[in-house]
Length: 219
Image (cartoon, rainbow, N blue to C red):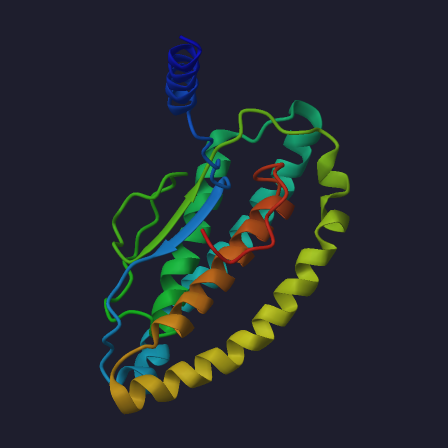
């Protein structure tokens, strides 16, 4: 009898254990992704950066617009604890355009990025290779804009090191593609990870969310 009770108790415990839902990690509110084949035509590293110049100029101009919008958002957060949704969507578009352009200029892809200026926090899927999605915050801490930059100093130090490493990775990728026609997946993943790290940091310091970014390159 004692053995049966023990077995029944064990089965109930096992059943209860199976019903406990597993915790899932909440994704960071600034997401950057990349999808594409590793085959890149050998000639592209030699001239693709030239083809990207019009997009780079537009991306630079959009960056200046983003700086102005961020200044406006600073006062909006201080007084209302919110960012106007149209401004948030516009800023998301500038980051998305920047990533599409960067991924092309660094010959991570062959398809020319679209001239797409649709303001939206969620990626519109126009570019199947480069994706940027930002989660709109319903409310923000009123005072964090005054000291976020200070909290982000360790991240800037890490990003500096990652940027220096990226230079060598880009050079290695250049020769790998020129001689083999294939972009090494490890090198590509590193560059995507650094871009993701940079976006998270910019989104945090740029008042787009209050969640401290992780020290990680992964999604």
